[in-house]
Image 1 (tube, helix red, strand yellow):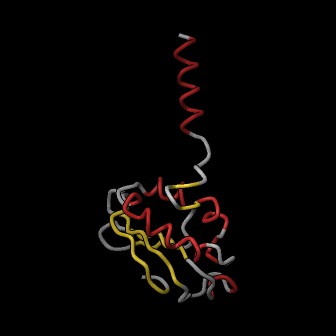
Image 2: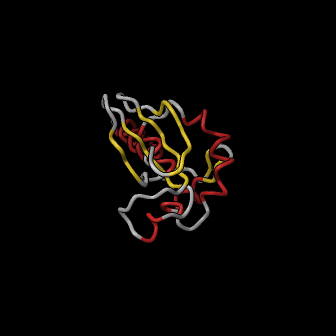
Image 3: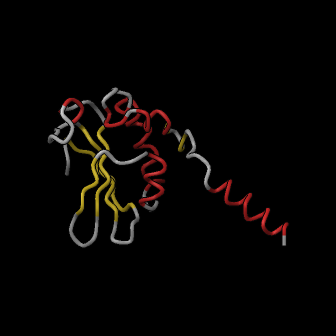
Amino acid sequence: MKSKLYCFVALLAVSCGPPPDRFGQLDIKTWREDRGGCSGKRAALVPALKAVQQDLKGKSANEIGELLGRPDVNQIADRNQKFYIYFLAQGDHCSQPGTKSNAPSVAFRMSAIGLATEITYQNGIP
């Protein structure tokens, strides 16, 4: 019985570890450190993000949040869908939080069952 408990605790410890520093070519540690794209580091990571975006599709909302950090904007859409929006560069949102920003951003569309189905790039919020 004790050995099963030790195995369970070991499995739990491994599965609850910190997120990795890289996802393919994307340096997600740097991505997470640049909250809102306000430090200008995310803009340089866009090519790496585009290189791994097919691998991000199909991931759950929780997995996206663990990898990329809390979204800058969490927008509810129709039919129980939502968008996780991450700003890629500085904008009005940096100096005046809560204001509408036209800064470049990436949006992850989450389906009603919580899976990333579409990734789009735009200025501001879709």
